[in-house]
Amino acid sequence: MTVTVAKMDGKLVEIVKVADQVAFSRERGWVMVCFDFEQPERKKSSFRWVPAVTRFDWVRTFSF
Image (tube, rainbow, N blue to C red; front, side, top):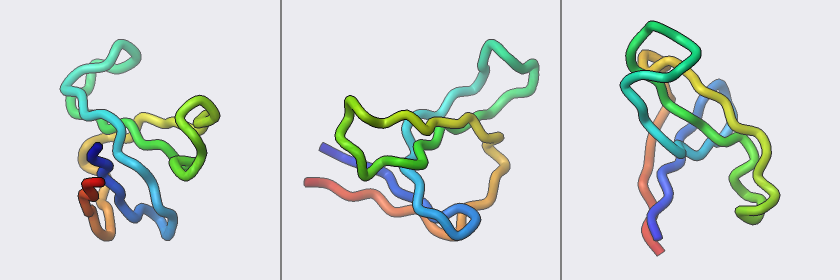
């Protein structure tokens, strides 16, 4: 299993998905992040799409 974690605005987030197009916008380039990734899969509820131009302080991939 591989998880990509990033630091954004002082918070740790999980990068869940990267999409070129989404249904709610004509702009291209989006990243879905999860703000409560420490929860079990079935309890995760805080997801948000952010533009791909969003700056992350750092991004790391963990495999386990």
